[in-house]
Length: 173
Image (tube, rainbow, N blue to C red; front, side, top):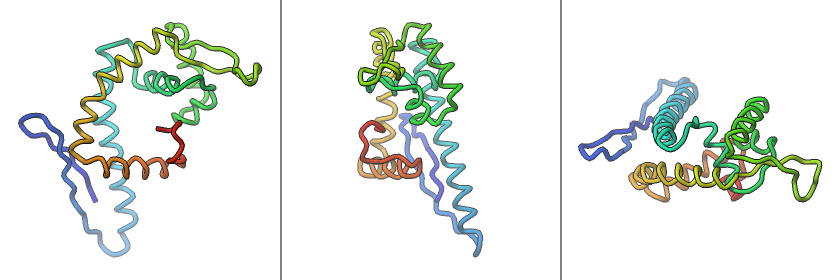
């Protein structure tokens, strides 16, 4: 199966689903490579769009916004951010340091264990994160509306399972 984004004159996104038949013995390899290609294209489409919206609000890249978004759910440890965002610990640490210096995140000790470091949004970090989210949300909502809520929910659940997440865990949403 192959999903292609199409835009009409109103620039509304439509998805065209094309089923590809594979020769015997190639079904698995073809499906795996199609899956890789589709994820790559969807990633580029969404990330490129998000990058433009983020740049219109703040001097941040997409990965920095994703850290802010994860921290917007409450204080979180650097290790948890690394796990949630599938990043390297060194990269997460650099991003946190940059966002702390920018005044968007703050470091503190965890309430339950003073030895554990957590990060949380500053007031400015929350303001910037909310502005970016409000700017990104309408375009994503248009794309979701074109697909339908049931299919979006199924897709998100499937991707969470693929990532090894617990789809019932609200901290992952």
